[in-house]
Image (cartoon, rainbow over all chains, first blue to last red; front, side, top):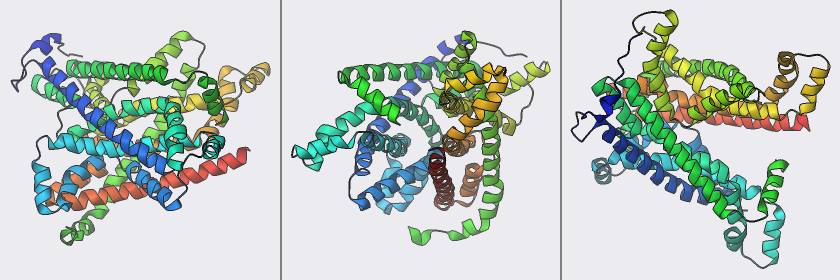
Length: 250
Length: 231
């Protein structure tokens, strides 16, 4: 078994003349974070909205919300990226389609859209579960106090729902970062794509992938630590017992 | 727009796409599911073991694997496999490992981590007393697992295991990056050859949607039936 290890490779200049291999990898990490964060914001906003709509009393709205979730959950993320990248610009009016295709960083915007919609369906599922997990008495009490439906959601149901679903949201946050690697198929030079490019230029495949692996692990760790702090920051005193009761009831 | 939609390209190619591409995807899914559940169950047993070393090893493996993108893991194994093969067979040069074998091993090792977490919850859902009763009757650890705990754990977790398999079925599309002839890769080759990207990708998306939606409805029904049966 022969493999020529060369850990010094990271300090050599990469052929795309933008700096060392290490610098290009970090550039890739920046794209991964930018894509992941933008998609995550989009997924949080859309997912919360759709998830909330799926719990209201109007059956038409609920069915529309369910259809949205099924649509984005039942296709692989790769196929969704291809749809947004190759198909959607063709279906737009010609002028608009050309404009979209010629956007600078079009693969970045496509990746954000695809990941945002894909992840929003998962967030919606969690938000719905978080609202449903609360005892009916909460809504009844809010109604008895004279709150409107919107007020009940805004002041009673949603604040608690988000606290309940913080752990699954943490894994979705990590997932969106990981799934951004799929965007290399539409030409986004994120972390995995950079590691792959480094392997092609330098033939130091295992050094390149080891570096990418360590960067992903660090990114995940950062997310876990951030979410843990957030969880502690928003914790309602005395509520842990109630949450455990909810968890046990399921 | 839709007026330009060329149904003919689908009429010409759907048999190749479904009977070669989709069948390939389904084969990889089925084999990875079997391998993944077996290896995942072993990992879960290791994680729950009282042996700290075993438990930490399994936990470390599962956590590391779960924090990496599948795309990167596929690349890792694709390049690593020839060296592992040479190491196993004692060859002096990296050996050729087919892309199929490489993909299959990747999915088994990767998905096992997700099946492991499910099976861990499944094993923990069985009251300790049952295992203790088994030991009291003189069963060994493996007898307790095989005859008392695992059959019930599987049964309780069946819907979740199947849901994970639907995710796996979608994940298999990522073999596109190492050009294995799965459903997506074949469709994209035809799309580029005939200049029919819109038609091909819409068709692929539709097929995935129908298959996954049908499977998830089946799982949902199974879930209600299991819930009724246990109460």
